[in-house]
Image: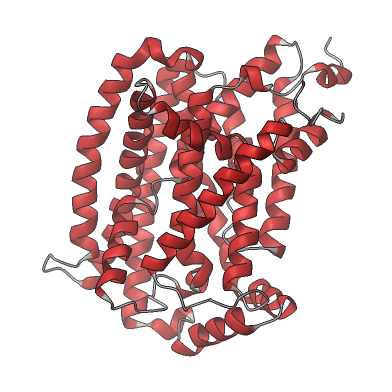
Length: 411
């Protein structure tokens, strides 16, 4: 019989056991998520229900907005999610090898992540993803013992089903915005109030506004957001069942095949998304905008896989290794960097900081993201020279194993 104390003998993955390719991809995903989130930090998108809260008409801002929509938004959170699925499988495999109740240990890990996410969601920023990941992670436990093909089928059909459902809700939402905007509470007054409070309010005023106006919407969205993440986790789980993730170089033919397919589908779905977002076809506006949301999901997954396989292939070439090694440093402490991104951005944009909310367009947002992430690269590099983990990774591991983890790099 296994004993609870056995869990204390399972140590988290040490630096020497890390898969550096995954750290590099995770670092790329972290940068993409920051790029995608920049507009959410500075516009009341959580309560605008798809209505454009601020119109940026300058040509450079329009171009930047299209760039973000076509190649960034919806492409990197799937990457993070697939990596979570891969990490889940590695964690359980390692725990099983140590002879412990692996699923129980992982459930504890998810519970701690849920606590981090709840604190982040309530007190820092409404765009938290950690709560979604923790809740979806509990569902992922149901699929660990399935065969690879079964996992892939579940992932594929769940994703298609929820993408179509998102398209349906997108059509309904766009129709309400067009014909009955008052019925869903979207008014210029609400958006004006959001801009004013978030731009000039104290921390207490911003917190109250978010708790009253944003949090209920975010929590309601969990009903769809959590199941939508599950198939992405399953794609990651499938990869670990399909290939030896510790020896990706032995499976490059398979990676190249996936790369080609994802590129083709990425182009197709991106064009379909652009056509409907631009309302090119002679169909009702609400129908076109709703379909755009569905095609955004499909293009997001396809381009996400294309980006991941591209990094995998490029890392095999010595010329590209130094660049992706830079991404690996923030990737090794992705949880800490993700949370620090929120601290930095709410300070920049909210009233209790520099108050730039609703004042920075898409083009400047890209520049801000590059500067912030560049700083994170530098800080992560020097931090990891002294410490094994980021501060929140260390706290997460210590709480999971109920034992203080060694923090400093062994000399």
